[in-house]
Image (tube, rainbow, N blue to C red; front, side, top):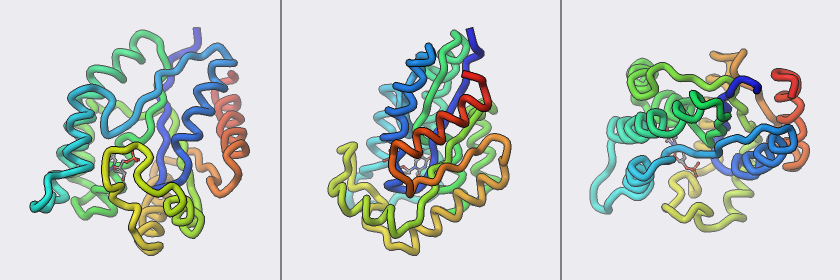
Length: 215
Ligand code: TMP
């Protein structure tokens, strides 16, 4: 049996993470690897409840960046302890749509909580667990903005999709923050050109999996 691997998908809004996730699950299956597919914030009943508050906070009260950081990290603590670590320990691979890098970018680099505070929260909530490989879906914001516009209401149905009304400038700042982060962890990150058709993005991701782990 191959060693269980922890893979994450990251990127701004509308970059095609869900499509890539389904494609990877199917492809890995053809290689005899069953992978547990999950997402953040969420992934357990308690973490999903926290996601609900995070994505649709009650009206009439602004949520502070610090509260946001604590919420996503609380959800992650539950997710890591109850789902991700047990799966990896039992030998199962895990594919997670967003993980701690989203906190580093959205709350740390972008949201102004500060990267040092965010790193402390991440370490506390994950016990130091980091992915073996992170695919960053990177795409020019004129393309992602078009996709976000085309998909209309939040496809996951659980909020006002907080960045869907964001302008190009905001989307581009998010993109640059992710690229900067990838530069901090060059061995872990693999950048995919998400402006390509989905089948090409998948092909590139699978080639990287083959290269790294001889699947
Ligand atoms: P998504 O499931 O549609 O990608 O939505 C998740 C949203 O939550 C997205 O806007 C990014 C944001 N987010 C954070 O701000 N911090 C985090 O740690 C995570 C996991 C997500």
